[in-house]
Amino acid sequence: MRVSGFLLALLLCCCFHAQAQIPRGVNDTIRLGGIIVGKDTFAMVFLNELEVLDKLPRRLARQRAQWDRLRYNVTKVYPYAVAAAEVLRNVDVNLDRFGDDKRARKAYLKSIEHELNKRWKGEISDLTISQGQVLVKLIDRQTGKNCFSIIREMKGGLTATVWQGVALLFANNLKREYDGLGADQDIERIVRDLELQNYYRYKAATQGR
Image (tube, rainbow, N blue to C red; front, side):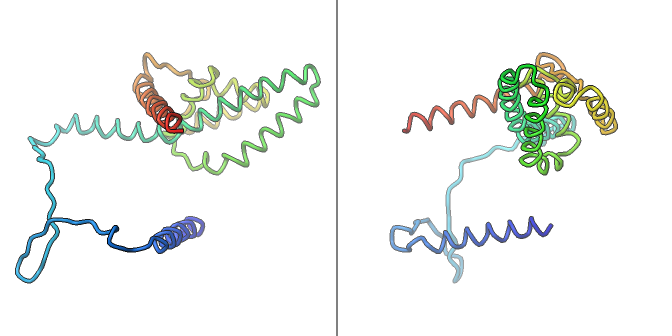
């Protein structure tokens, strides 16, 4: 809580400082319509018409809430899955350079583990159980390997089995494979939408150069 409070205070101070640096003048004025009620003047703006027919049926409202929650979770953990895939690609390439030198391979994997813990452990540990379940699926989607196989390759079968037991206690399964055409089709739709958005953002940014 102290860290969060400090960061929030820091952000507020930065925003205040940035706002204080903006020169004020006639060009900063935004003209609005207004109405006078008694001695008071109120700003007046015209909004587009909005037609409200009725509330969503309870069943549809519940489905919408579930979809919104899933989209939030996918959006939150998808960057971690992309980063994991990139790390694993680099690991595979570098391990080939060591050949049969088991000591060098072990030292390299130890350094990778240290860097990953340093960079991601705090953030990953703050994920909810539902977000962890989605992350396990997305890592399989991005890497083509389930989390159990990844841990077994990097840490050995015993460690992978231990972590699988821990995962099962939290309603997760490191052996779970991604099924974008079946059970995970909703996640797939959300991911493709995120990828499409990022593509157009990247395209717009590069064209503006």
